[in-house]
Image (cartoon, rainbow, N blue to C red; front, top):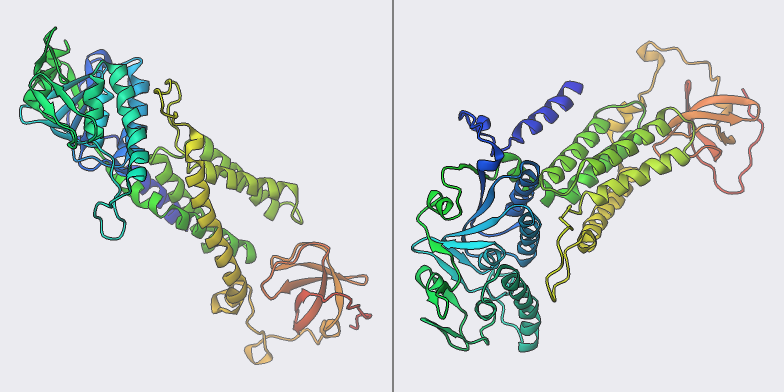
Length: 493
Protein backbone atom coordinates (compact mmCIF):
# COMPACT_ATOMS: atom_id res chain seq x y z
CA UNK A 1 0.00 0.00 0.00
CA UNK A 2 2.89 2.38 0.74
CA UNK A 3 4.37 1.70 -2.69
CA UNK A 4 1.01 2.45 -4.31
CA UNK A 5 0.72 5.74 -2.39
CA UNK A 6 4.21 7.03 -3.26
CA UNK A 7 3.92 5.73 -6.82
CA UNK A 8 0.79 7.80 -7.34
CA UNK A 9 2.44 10.93 -5.97
CA UNK A 10 5.48 10.45 -8.20
CA UNK A 11 3.32 9.94 -11.29
CA UNK A 12 1.39 13.12 -10.54
CA UNK A 13 4.59 15.09 -10.02
CA UNK A 14 5.97 13.79 -13.31
CA UNK A 15 3.09 15.39 -15.26
CA UNK A 16 3.96 18.82 -13.92
CA UNK A 17 6.60 19.77 -16.49
CA UNK A 18 7.26 23.39 -17.25
CA UNK A 19 6.57 23.88 -20.95
CA UNK A 20 8.88 26.85 -21.16
CA UNK A 21 11.97 24.74 -20.42
CA UNK A 22 13.44 23.55 -23.75
CA UNK A 23 14.96 20.49 -22.05
CA UNK A 24 11.44 19.26 -21.21
CA UNK A 25 10.61 19.11 -24.92
CA UNK A 26 13.74 17.36 -26.04
CA UNK A 27 15.30 20.54 -27.46
CA UNK A 28 18.74 21.83 -26.60
CA UNK A 29 18.66 24.54 -23.98
CA UNK A 30 19.21 28.12 -25.11
CA UNK A 31 21.39 29.77 -22.50
CA UNK A 32 20.50 33.28 -23.63
CA UNK A 33 20.31 35.66 -20.68
CA UNK A 34 16.85 36.71 -19.41
CA UNK A 35 17.57 40.29 -20.57
CA UNK A 36 17.32 39.04 -24.18
CA UNK A 37 14.46 36.60 -23.64
CA UNK A 38 10.88 37.35 -24.66
CA UNK A 39 7.99 35.36 -23.23
CA UNK A 40 5.07 34.71 -25.58
CA UNK A 41 1.78 33.87 -23.89
CA UNK A 42 -0.81 32.41 -26.27
CA UNK A 43 -4.37 33.67 -25.84
CA UNK A 44 -5.94 31.30 -28.34
CA UNK A 45 -9.47 30.02 -28.05
CA UNK A 46 -12.03 30.86 -25.41
CA UNK A 47 -10.74 32.68 -22.35
CA UNK A 48 -11.72 30.35 -19.52
CA UNK A 49 -10.43 28.82 -16.27
CA UNK A 50 -7.97 26.59 -18.12
CA UNK A 51 -6.34 29.56 -19.82
CA UNK A 52 -6.24 31.39 -16.50
CA UNK A 53 -4.24 28.51 -14.97
CA UNK A 54 -1.61 28.94 -17.72
CA UNK A 55 -1.50 32.71 -17.14
CA UNK A 56 -1.02 32.34 -13.38
CA UNK A 57 1.92 29.99 -13.90
CA UNK A 58 3.34 32.12 -16.71
CA UNK A 59 3.21 35.42 -14.83
CA UNK A 60 4.72 33.83 -11.73
CA UNK A 61 7.59 32.67 -13.94
CA UNK A 62 7.83 36.14 -15.48
CA UNK A 63 8.19 37.64 -12.01
CA UNK A 64 10.93 35.15 -11.19
CA UNK A 65 13.02 35.50 -14.36
CA UNK A 66 12.19 39.10 -15.43
CA UNK A 67 12.52 38.77 -19.24
CA UNK A 68 12.93 41.68 -21.63
CA UNK A 69 9.25 41.68 -22.65
CA UNK A 70 6.00 39.72 -22.59
CA UNK A 71 3.95 39.29 -25.78
CA UNK A 72 0.32 38.15 -25.75
CA UNK A 73 -0.37 36.22 -28.98
CA UNK A 74 -4.13 36.72 -29.39
CA UNK A 75 -6.57 34.75 -31.49
CA UNK A 76 -9.73 34.55 -29.44
CA UNK A 77 -13.50 35.04 -29.76
CA UNK A 78 -13.55 36.25 -26.14
CA UNK A 79 -14.59 34.62 -22.90
CA UNK A 80 -15.58 35.25 -19.32
CA UNK A 81 -15.17 38.73 -17.86
CA UNK A 82 -14.10 37.44 -14.43
CA UNK A 83 -11.10 35.58 -15.89
CA UNK A 84 -10.35 38.55 -18.15
CA UNK A 85 -10.17 40.95 -15.20
CA UNK A 86 -7.69 38.70 -13.36
CA UNK A 87 -5.50 38.40 -16.47
CA UNK A 88 -5.49 42.20 -16.77
CA UNK A 89 -4.53 42.43 -13.09
CA UNK A 90 -1.50 40.22 -13.75
CA UNK A 91 -0.63 42.30 -16.84
CA UNK A 92 -0.83 45.61 -14.97
CA UNK A 93 1.36 44.26 -12.18
CA UNK A 94 3.96 42.99 -14.69
CA UNK A 95 3.95 46.26 -16.67
CA UNK A 96 5.42 48.12 -13.71
CA UNK A 97 8.71 46.33 -14.42
CA UNK A 98 8.42 44.63 -17.83
CA UNK A 99 6.67 45.89 -21.00
CA UNK A 100 3.67 43.84 -22.20
CA UNK A 101 2.70 43.87 -25.89
CA UNK A 102 -0.44 42.51 -27.57
CA UNK A 103 -0.20 40.82 -30.98
CA UNK A 104 -3.65 40.42 -32.60
CA UNK A 105 -3.05 37.33 -34.72
CA UNK A 106 -5.52 37.42 -36.35
CA UNK A 107 -8.56 38.19 -34.15
CA UNK A 108 -9.17 39.69 -30.71
CA UNK A 109 -12.88 39.98 -30.10
CA UNK A 110 -14.76 40.75 -26.90
CA UNK A 111 -12.57 39.85 -23.90
CA UNK A 112 -9.58 39.57 -26.27
CA UNK A 113 -10.02 43.22 -27.26
CA UNK A 114 -10.22 44.27 -23.60
CA UNK A 115 -7.00 42.39 -22.82
CA UNK A 116 -5.32 44.10 -25.79
CA UNK A 117 -6.22 47.51 -24.36
CA UNK A 118 -4.32 46.53 -21.20
CA UNK A 119 -1.03 46.20 -23.12
CA UNK A 120 1.64 48.88 -23.52
CA UNK A 121 1.40 48.63 -27.31
CA UNK A 122 -0.79 46.71 -29.77
CA UNK A 123 0.39 45.14 -33.03
CA UNK A 124 -1.86 43.69 -35.74
CA UNK A 125 -1.36 40.87 -38.21
CA UNK A 126 -2.27 41.86 -41.80
CA UNK A 127 -5.65 40.05 -41.63
CA UNK A 128 -6.37 41.02 -38.01
CA UNK A 129 -9.59 42.29 -36.43
CA UNK A 130 -10.22 43.74 -32.98
CA UNK A 131 -13.32 44.95 -31.13
CA UNK A 132 -16.95 43.87 -30.51
CA UNK A 133 -16.46 43.78 -26.73
CA UNK A 134 -20.00 44.27 -25.39
CA UNK A 135 -20.68 41.90 -22.46
CA UNK A 136 -23.45 39.35 -23.07
CA UNK A 137 -25.28 36.83 -20.93
CA UNK A 138 -25.27 33.19 -22.09
CA UNK A 139 -28.33 31.06 -21.38
CA UNK A 140 -27.03 28.05 -19.38
CA UNK A 141 -29.78 25.79 -20.77
CA UNK A 142 -29.28 26.17 -24.52
CA UNK A 143 -26.01 28.12 -24.77
CA UNK A 144 -27.68 30.97 -26.67
CA UNK A 145 -27.47 34.71 -26.00
CA UNK A 146 -30.09 35.78 -23.47
CA UNK A 147 -32.08 38.94 -24.12
CA UNK A 148 -32.03 41.38 -21.20
CA UNK A 149 -34.21 44.33 -20.20
CA UNK A 150 -32.66 47.73 -20.89
CA UNK A 151 -31.92 48.49 -17.21
CA UNK A 152 -30.19 45.14 -16.65
CA UNK A 153 -28.27 45.55 -19.90
CA UNK A 154 -26.97 48.94 -18.77
CA UNK A 155 -25.88 47.48 -15.42
CA UNK A 156 -23.80 44.89 -17.30
CA UNK A 157 -22.29 47.34 -19.77
CA UNK A 158 -21.45 50.12 -17.31
CA UNK A 159 -18.63 48.30 -15.40
CA UNK A 160 -17.13 47.02 -18.66
CA UNK A 161 -17.27 50.50 -20.16
CA UNK A 162 -15.44 51.83 -17.09
CA UNK A 163 -12.86 49.05 -17.42
CA UNK A 164 -11.96 49.78 -21.06
CA UNK A 165 -12.04 53.54 -20.40
CA UNK A 166 -9.55 53.13 -17.54
CA UNK A 167 -7.28 50.88 -19.63
CA UNK A 168 -7.36 53.29 -22.57
CA UNK A 169 -6.46 56.22 -20.33
CA UNK A 170 -3.67 54.26 -18.67
CA UNK A 171 -2.06 53.12 -21.93
CA UNK A 172 -2.67 56.14 -24.15
CA UNK A 173 -5.43 54.80 -26.43
CA UNK A 174 -8.45 56.75 -27.69
CA UNK A 175 -11.09 56.56 -24.94
CA UNK A 176 -14.09 57.16 -27.26
CA UNK A 177 -12.88 54.36 -29.53
CA UNK A 178 -12.53 51.95 -26.59
CA UNK A 179 -16.05 52.73 -25.31
CA UNK A 180 -17.51 52.27 -28.81
CA UNK A 181 -16.22 48.68 -28.76
CA UNK A 182 -18.30 48.01 -25.64
CA UNK A 183 -21.40 50.19 -25.93
CA UNK A 184 -23.51 50.34 -29.12
CA UNK A 185 -24.95 53.67 -27.94
CA UNK A 186 -21.51 55.30 -28.32
CA UNK A 187 -21.03 56.78 -31.80
CA UNK A 188 -17.43 56.95 -33.03
CA UNK A 189 -16.26 58.77 -36.15
CA UNK A 190 -12.59 59.64 -36.61
CA UNK A 191 -10.69 59.87 -39.88
CA UNK A 192 -11.53 56.92 -42.10
CA UNK A 193 -13.24 55.03 -39.26
CA UNK A 194 -16.96 55.43 -38.81
CA UNK A 195 -19.15 53.52 -36.35
CA UNK A 196 -22.71 54.90 -36.15
CA UNK A 197 -24.87 54.69 -33.05
CA UNK A 198 -26.50 51.28 -32.65
CA UNK A 199 -23.42 49.34 -33.81
CA UNK A 200 -20.37 47.99 -32.00
CA UNK A 201 -16.96 49.10 -33.19
CA UNK A 202 -14.74 46.44 -34.77
CA UNK A 203 -11.51 47.54 -36.44
CA UNK A 204 -9.67 45.81 -39.25
CA UNK A 205 -5.88 45.83 -39.21
CA UNK A 206 -5.85 48.62 -41.78
CA UNK A 207 -8.26 50.75 -39.73
CA UNK A 208 -6.45 50.04 -36.44
CA UNK A 209 -3.15 51.28 -37.93
CA UNK A 210 -4.60 54.19 -39.94
CA UNK A 211 -3.02 57.59 -39.12
CA UNK A 212 -5.18 60.09 -37.25
CA UNK A 213 -4.76 63.82 -37.79
CA UNK A 214 -3.32 66.14 -36.75
CA UNK A 215 -0.21 64.26 -35.52
CA UNK A 216 -0.61 61.23 -37.80
CA UNK A 217 -0.33 58.68 -34.98
CA UNK A 218 -2.02 55.28 -35.57
CA UNK A 219 -5.60 55.02 -34.29
CA UNK A 220 -4.91 51.95 -32.13
CA UNK A 221 -2.19 49.54 -33.26
CA UNK A 222 1.45 50.57 -33.50
CA UNK A 223 2.13 48.63 -36.71
CA UNK A 224 1.23 45.73 -38.98
CA UNK A 225 3.59 42.76 -38.45
CA UNK A 226 3.60 39.32 -40.07
CA UNK A 227 5.07 37.40 -37.13
CA UNK A 228 6.72 37.64 -33.72
CA UNK A 229 10.27 38.24 -35.07
CA UNK A 230 9.01 41.25 -37.05
CA UNK A 231 7.24 42.54 -33.94
CA UNK A 232 10.52 42.29 -32.00
CA UNK A 233 12.20 44.55 -34.53
CA UNK A 234 9.64 47.29 -33.72
CA UNK A 235 10.42 47.10 -29.98
CA UNK A 236 14.24 46.97 -30.34
CA UNK A 237 14.48 43.27 -29.40
CA UNK A 238 15.46 41.79 -32.76
CA UNK A 239 17.16 38.42 -32.33
CA UNK A 240 15.92 37.87 -28.78
CA UNK A 241 15.19 34.32 -27.68
CA UNK A 242 11.45 33.51 -27.77
CA UNK A 243 10.06 31.26 -25.01
CA UNK A 244 6.46 30.26 -25.64
CA UNK A 245 4.21 29.15 -22.81
CA UNK A 246 1.72 26.38 -23.45
CA UNK A 247 -0.81 24.47 -21.44
CA UNK A 248 0.78 21.28 -20.08
CA UNK A 249 -0.64 18.01 -18.86
CA UNK A 250 -0.74 19.06 -15.22
CA UNK A 251 -2.89 22.08 -16.06
CA UNK A 252 -5.32 19.97 -18.07
CA UNK A 253 -5.48 17.61 -15.10
CA UNK A 254 -6.00 20.59 -12.78
CA UNK A 255 -9.17 21.52 -14.69
CA UNK A 256 -10.74 18.20 -13.72
CA UNK A 257 -9.40 18.23 -10.18
CA UNK A 258 -10.65 21.74 -9.39
CA UNK A 259 -13.97 20.98 -11.07
CA UNK A 260 -14.39 17.92 -8.85
CA UNK A 261 -12.72 19.67 -5.90
CA UNK A 262 -15.62 19.58 -3.41
CA UNK A 263 -16.24 15.87 -4.11
CA UNK A 264 -12.54 14.92 -3.88
CA UNK A 265 -12.10 16.81 -0.60
CA UNK A 266 -15.27 15.27 0.84
CA UNK A 267 -14.24 11.73 -0.16
CA UNK A 268 -10.79 12.28 1.35
CA UNK A 269 -12.31 13.40 4.65
CA UNK A 270 -14.77 10.48 4.62
CA UNK A 271 -11.90 8.04 4.02
CA UNK A 272 -10.15 9.36 7.12
CA UNK A 273 -13.46 9.24 8.99
CA UNK A 274 -13.90 5.53 8.23
CA UNK A 275 -10.28 4.92 9.25
CA UNK A 276 -11.00 6.77 12.48
CA UNK A 277 -13.88 4.38 13.26
CA UNK A 278 -11.91 1.18 12.60
CA UNK A 279 -8.90 -0.21 14.47
CA UNK A 280 -5.38 0.15 13.07
CA UNK A 281 -4.48 2.02 9.89
CA UNK A 282 -5.28 0.62 6.46
CA UNK A 283 -6.79 1.13 3.05
CA UNK A 284 -9.33 3.80 4.02
CA UNK A 285 -6.71 5.99 5.68
CA UNK A 286 -4.34 5.69 2.72
CA UNK A 287 -7.19 6.40 0.27
CA UNK A 288 -8.20 9.51 2.24
CA UNK A 289 -4.63 10.84 2.27
CA UNK A 290 -4.16 10.13 -1.47
CA UNK A 291 -7.40 11.96 -2.33
CA UNK A 292 -6.32 14.96 -0.24
CA UNK A 293 -2.93 14.96 -2.02
CA UNK A 294 -4.67 14.90 -5.43
CA UNK A 295 -6.97 17.73 -4.32
CA UNK A 296 -4.12 20.00 -3.22
CA UNK A 297 -1.95 19.04 -6.21
CA UNK A 298 -4.68 20.22 -8.61
CA UNK A 299 -5.31 23.43 -6.70
CA UNK A 300 -1.57 24.15 -6.49
CA UNK A 301 -1.19 23.79 -10.28
CA UNK A 302 -4.27 25.97 -10.79
CA UNK A 303 -2.60 28.78 -8.84
CA UNK A 304 -5.02 28.47 -5.94
CA UNK A 305 -3.26 26.57 -3.16
CA UNK A 306 0.27 27.56 -2.20
CA UNK A 307 2.86 26.05 0.11
CA UNK A 308 1.25 27.80 3.06
CA UNK A 309 -2.13 26.08 2.61
CA UNK A 310 -0.50 22.68 2.07
CA UNK A 311 1.63 23.10 5.21
CA UNK A 312 -1.46 24.09 7.21
CA UNK A 313 -3.28 20.91 6.21
CA UNK A 314 -0.19 18.76 6.78
CA UNK A 315 0.24 20.24 10.27
CA UNK A 316 -3.45 19.61 10.96
CA UNK A 317 -3.16 15.96 9.90
CA UNK A 318 -0.11 15.52 12.14
CA UNK A 319 -1.94 16.99 15.14
CA UNK A 320 -4.96 14.80 14.43
CA UNK A 321 -2.76 11.70 14.22
CA UNK A 322 -1.10 12.61 17.55
CA UNK A 323 -4.54 13.01 19.13
CA UNK A 324 -5.82 9.70 17.77
CA UNK A 325 -2.82 7.45 18.34
CA UNK A 326 -0.77 8.98 21.16
CA UNK A 327 -3.09 10.95 23.45
CA UNK A 328 -6.02 9.22 25.15
CA UNK A 329 -9.37 10.88 24.65
CA UNK A 330 -10.04 13.77 22.29
CA UNK A 331 -9.13 17.31 23.29
CA UNK A 332 -7.37 20.53 22.33
CA UNK A 333 -4.78 18.95 20.03
CA UNK A 334 -7.42 17.18 17.94
CA UNK A 335 -9.63 20.27 17.73
CA UNK A 336 -6.65 22.40 16.67
CA UNK A 337 -5.78 19.82 14.00
CA UNK A 338 -9.31 19.94 12.58
CA UNK A 339 -9.24 23.76 12.55
CA UNK A 340 -5.93 23.78 10.63
CA UNK A 341 -7.25 21.28 8.08
CA UNK A 342 -10.45 23.26 7.52
CA UNK A 343 -8.56 26.57 7.27
CA UNK A 344 -6.03 25.20 4.77
CA UNK A 345 -8.79 23.59 2.68
CA UNK A 346 -10.74 26.86 2.55
CA UNK A 347 -7.71 29.01 1.69
CA UNK A 348 -6.84 26.55 -1.10
CA UNK A 349 -9.96 27.75 -2.93
CA UNK A 350 -8.81 31.40 -2.99
CA UNK A 351 -6.22 32.39 -5.63
CA UNK A 352 -3.25 34.61 -4.92
CA UNK A 353 -3.54 37.66 -7.19
CA UNK A 354 -1.16 40.62 -7.45
CA UNK A 355 -2.20 43.48 -5.20
CA UNK A 356 0.58 45.93 -6.06
CA UNK A 357 -1.40 47.80 -8.74
CA UNK A 358 -3.68 50.82 -8.19
CA UNK A 359 -7.35 50.37 -9.00
CA UNK A 360 -8.63 51.70 -12.31
CA UNK A 361 -11.07 54.65 -12.00
CA UNK A 362 -14.58 53.38 -11.31
CA UNK A 363 -13.47 49.74 -10.99
CA UNK A 364 -13.15 47.94 -7.68
CA UNK A 365 -9.74 46.24 -7.36
CA UNK A 366 -9.47 42.46 -7.38
CA UNK A 367 -8.46 41.28 -3.91
CA UNK A 368 -8.43 37.91 -2.19
CA UNK A 369 -11.74 38.63 -0.46
CA UNK A 370 -13.37 38.90 -3.90
CA UNK A 371 -13.16 35.12 -4.08
CA UNK A 372 -14.33 34.35 -0.54
CA UNK A 373 -18.02 33.92 -1.40
CA UNK A 374 -17.30 31.38 -4.14
CA UNK A 375 -14.85 29.56 -1.87
CA UNK A 376 -17.41 29.39 0.95
CA UNK A 377 -20.02 28.02 -1.45
CA UNK A 378 -17.71 25.20 -2.56
CA UNK A 379 -16.74 24.57 1.04
CA UNK A 380 -20.42 24.29 2.03
CA UNK A 381 -20.96 21.74 -0.74
CA UNK A 382 -18.04 19.72 0.68
CA UNK A 383 -19.44 20.01 4.21
CA UNK A 384 -22.87 18.81 3.03
CA UNK A 385 -21.34 15.77 1.28
CA UNK A 386 -19.29 14.95 4.39
CA UNK A 387 -22.32 15.32 6.69
CA UNK A 388 -24.57 13.08 4.59
CA UNK A 389 -21.77 10.60 3.89
CA UNK A 390 -20.75 10.47 7.55
CA UNK A 391 -24.34 9.79 8.62
CA UNK A 392 -24.75 7.01 6.06
CA UNK A 393 -21.41 5.47 7.03
CA UNK A 394 -22.31 5.51 10.73
CA UNK A 395 -25.60 3.78 9.96
CA UNK A 396 -24.67 1.37 7.20
CA UNK A 397 -20.95 0.63 7.46
CA UNK A 398 -21.14 -1.42 10.70
CA UNK A 399 -23.57 -3.78 8.91
CA UNK A 400 -21.18 -4.56 6.06
CA UNK A 401 -18.94 -7.61 5.78
CA UNK A 402 -15.90 -5.33 5.38
CA UNK A 403 -16.49 -3.81 8.81
CA UNK A 404 -16.99 -7.22 10.47
CA UNK A 405 -13.63 -8.34 9.09
CA UNK A 406 -11.92 -5.17 10.28
CA UNK A 407 -13.21 -5.47 13.85
CA UNK A 408 -12.83 -9.27 14.00
CA UNK A 409 -16.47 -10.08 14.57
CA UNK A 410 -16.20 -13.68 13.41
CA UNK A 411 -17.14 -16.12 16.16
CA UNK A 412 -14.53 -18.34 17.80
CA UNK A 413 -16.46 -21.60 18.33
CA UNK A 414 -15.39 -25.01 19.71
CA UNK A 415 -16.16 -26.50 16.28
CA UNK A 416 -13.44 -24.25 14.80
CA UNK A 417 -10.92 -25.42 17.36
CA UNK A 418 -11.20 -22.54 19.83
CA UNK A 419 -11.84 -22.97 23.54
CA UNK A 420 -14.39 -20.65 25.16
CA UNK A 421 -13.18 -18.74 28.18
CA UNK A 422 -15.69 -20.71 30.29
CA UNK A 423 -18.16 -17.82 30.37
CA UNK A 424 -15.65 -15.63 32.15
CA UNK A 425 -17.41 -12.43 31.01
CA UNK A 426 -20.99 -13.67 30.75
CA UNK A 427 -21.83 -12.07 34.09
CA UNK A 428 -21.16 -8.61 32.65
CA UNK A 429 -24.06 -8.84 30.18
CA UNK A 430 -26.43 -5.97 30.88
CA UNK A 431 -24.02 -4.23 33.26
CA UNK A 432 -23.45 -0.46 33.08
CA UNK A 433 -19.99 1.02 33.49
CA UNK A 434 -17.72 3.87 32.39
CA UNK A 435 -15.48 4.18 29.33
CA UNK A 436 -11.98 4.78 30.66
CA UNK A 437 -10.63 5.53 27.15
CA UNK A 438 -12.31 6.67 23.95
CA UNK A 439 -13.85 3.67 22.20
CA UNK A 440 -12.98 3.91 18.46
CA UNK A 441 -14.49 1.28 18.48
CA UNK A 442 -12.16 -0.64 20.83
CA UNK A 443 -10.92 0.56 24.18
CA UNK A 444 -11.01 0.05 27.95
CA UNK A 445 -14.05 0.27 30.26
CA UNK A 446 -14.50 0.04 34.00
CA UNK A 447 -17.26 -1.93 35.75
CA UNK A 448 -17.02 -1.43 39.50
CA UNK A 449 -13.38 -2.15 40.34
CA UNK A 450 -12.81 -4.27 37.22
CA UNK A 451 -11.33 -3.02 33.94
CA UNK A 452 -12.16 -4.81 30.69
CA UNK A 453 -11.20 -4.51 27.04
CA UNK A 454 -14.42 -3.77 25.16
CA UNK A 455 -15.58 -2.90 21.65
CA UNK A 456 -18.59 -0.95 20.38
CA UNK A 457 -20.84 -2.04 17.53
CA UNK A 458 -19.35 0.69 15.35
CA UNK A 459 -20.12 4.03 16.99
CA UNK A 460 -17.42 6.06 18.70
CA UNK A 461 -18.01 6.60 22.43
CA UNK A 462 -16.05 9.28 24.25
CA UNK A 463 -13.95 8.84 27.34
CA UNK A 464 -15.95 8.98 30.59
CA UNK A 465 -19.28 8.08 28.96
CA UNK A 466 -21.65 5.60 30.58
CA UNK A 467 -21.84 2.35 28.64
CA UNK A 468 -23.82 -0.89 28.79
CA UNK A 469 -22.73 -4.42 27.87
CA UNK A 470 -25.11 -5.69 25.18
CA UNK A 471 -23.32 -8.80 23.95
CA UNK A 472 -20.66 -11.19 25.21
CA UNK A 473 -18.96 -13.78 23.02
CA UNK A 474 -16.00 -15.52 24.58
CA UNK A 475 -13.47 -12.79 25.42
CA UNK A 476 -15.26 -10.25 23.25
CA UNK A 477 -17.40 -7.77 25.20
CA UNK A 478 -19.62 -5.52 23.05
CA UNK A 479 -20.97 -2.28 24.54
CA UNK A 480 -23.12 0.67 23.56
CA UNK A 481 -23.97 4.03 25.14
CA UNK A 482 -26.11 3.45 28.24
CA UNK A 483 -29.58 5.02 28.35
CA UNK A 484 -30.06 7.89 30.78
CA UNK A 485 -31.03 6.82 34.31
CA UNK A 486 -29.99 3.19 33.92
CA UNK A 487 -27.80 1.99 36.82
CA UNK A 488 -25.33 -0.84 37.07
CA UNK A 489 -25.69 -3.87 39.26
CA UNK A 490 -22.71 -5.74 40.70
CA UNK A 491 -20.93 -7.71 38.02
CA UNK A 492 -20.94 -11.46 38.37
CA UNK A 493 -18.03 -13.40 37.12
